[in-house]
Image 1 (cartoon, rainbow, N blue to C red):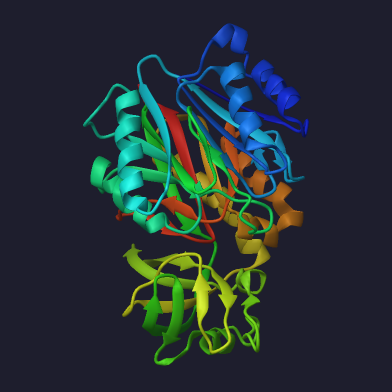
Image 2: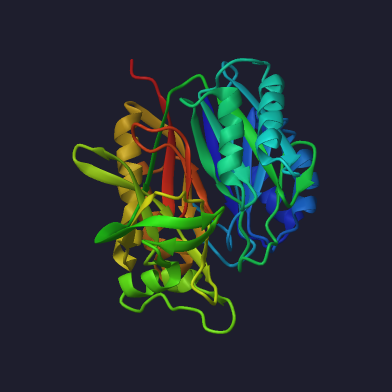
Length: 396
């Protein structure tokens, strides 16, 4: 297996793809078996899709937009038109990618995409080592359910919800055949070498907690029988405001004050899956970027600039330890909301990952939702999370 990653700051599609193709030494290495291409929405997805097919020729072509740009071993590019590629050549492995519109039934769409991806990998009916997922925000829990119906609950599913720069819906994604706005891209990977992945957040519980007593899909109405917005305002000591006469965006206000559900404890340490409050409504309802259920125990979580800056390196370090061999490359998912909150410190974030990986190739994306597998669990969708997935050479 060979892995290479490359970035371009050209800010234009054709020259950016040409620069990356040169850095990947396409003339010498040939067509990759898998290629993940992620980009800021300053670049046009349709142009990227067409240009990537010409430049790289990958049948397992997986594309998704990322908030403001990307990061990697060459640094952080969050000017709006960043472009990065993570490519695998693996004659002894199998790879397949498919994309579909989500349509009216996101779970069925995910089943269709996963089944087709396995067919394209030449491994129909088999269980992949991992799934790399890009999906439009909104119905990620249904998508995970559909994927698990095909590949099983024990499969590593990791990736992120596509993003734009301002939550205005300009995100996009593509597979080998088509570009989508409200869709998903599924890549199934059967690499010839081991994979290790870690999925965590940079937040800790404050101690304030309560039970969901009324919720409809992602709109949280009540905690402990009281309006959710009032509870959030109280638990955050006023940091998260309530709405008065009109709905109010609270995404930025709640970035350091999300809600968490304790999924399990590992060595006595609780793992919380986070939900990011997005909009407060008059009357006290709150829209979230992840689903919660009636009866769920919600904890007020709190983060800081330092915790978000340091966490990516710590997650990378744990993934490296779990890999159990020489790391050959990594894919990193870092929440777009976290990135915006610590934008001026993102060089420190990437430096923390570089400290772990050294000169190994890696690509990081900024997402509006993160999918991964907590320790001892199966795949989940959360917000304000970080994942690091490493490929490694087997120990001799």
